[in-house]
Length: 445
Image 1: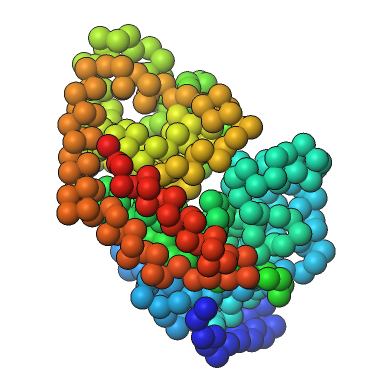
Image 2: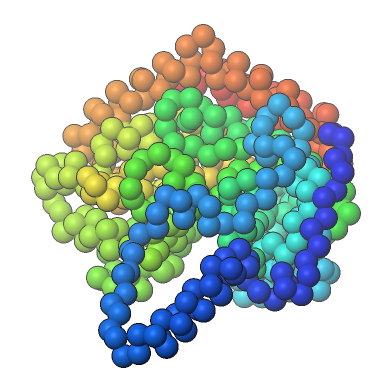
């Protein structure tokens, strides 16, 4: 485990606690503007002034409009050890657990987080994930099979999956440019090497992936756990993926990817819109779903290229097959991101939530895998169509990249060197987990 760095405490005065951050940063401009308007009103009287309205943020506004905490070291630097500690009031923690167990709600609560020695107060924290939390709830009622999928337990919050939002309660707050982090469920021994390796292989093949890092993680002084942290899709992520001007949507677990009507309200439980909320909505997705529901087989094959980037979708489908991830867009969690390009008006499907890839899906056990809410009409029709050849070619290309010079195994070996042991991850568990993943990776085909 890495050496702790000196804690940097952020003290907030009444002004900082009461006035929103964005207002504080621009207080001189705001007060100056108010004063100017008062003077103009007195001088100009009833003279008409027409306002100028800007519908898009300038690049400067996108870059500098948030209060960005730099920290002491790049969080996603694999060459150094990392530590995250959460401080949660016991009453708030119990509220969060009760809300999930009784109503299935993932309630946001306030917490303090220390990242590599830098303290950040009043961040938002909630439970994250679906399969792991369902297993936890069933185990707490005596219905589940212990150890099927993870080592998470409500008795040790350090083992739970969390979403962290820096700007949930502090408007405009970001850490190293990121508004959100995902502390992933711990599976197959606790290393999550399968998910990290999959994310790295996806990136190495030129596809869009997510940054990741291992940390020693603890909550309220409980025994620490080895956890994988990845960047959660937020506005910064939508800008950083480099696909130009567009809208990023994140599929929710209840998403059945079907046309429900023309009102965006009907799709609130299916998609989260990540960016461009002031200027765009879910209408492009609705149009795609409506077209899918009306298109016969011939129309589908003839017109799909007008709606979806065929090359990237072929690589997406081939990737999920090679790494054995059944919990993709057609799996029980309906996990995927959907990018809509505002220029060419096409969709790109992006991988998300790869923690059941490379053999970890074998631990689904009683949840039934494909039988639990699976299916996606776009992927299923794509695989049955003339585009099977595109998928086959993409598969050959990916296997060439990942197996040439033993690339996947060498990447695995490199990543195992930076996984920290912890109170909940012994060396024996670590070695067993890595050995299992290596056996699977050696036979990618």
